[in-house]
Picture: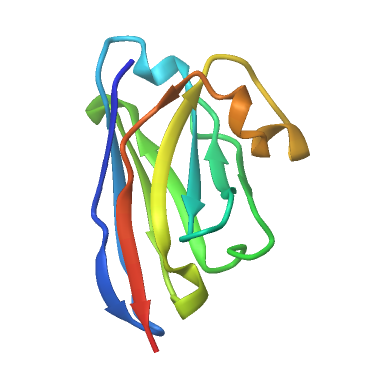
Length: 126
């Protein structure tokens, strides 16, 4: 599976962006897909995950209520709608796919994902 994230950019605080993660391969719809972000000098942090069917989602506390993850398996694409953006949301955002299921903290472990896309930069100005 190959993943490609896009949709990043520069936005003012309070604004919105929608990131996309396009996957290749006929089996993309069988993978859970997570979003992570990494700010300069910091570790890569978990943001959100969506199950293969889209029926289950999970969010980091820092983005809960502001970000929404969704997917369109017909288009092999996962989306991350980001609203009410804050300067602390500034980071490179990555999407990643995993073959196994997870729950809670287990979904936040970087090393538990099998495939990664390149990042897309999100910059939120104050």
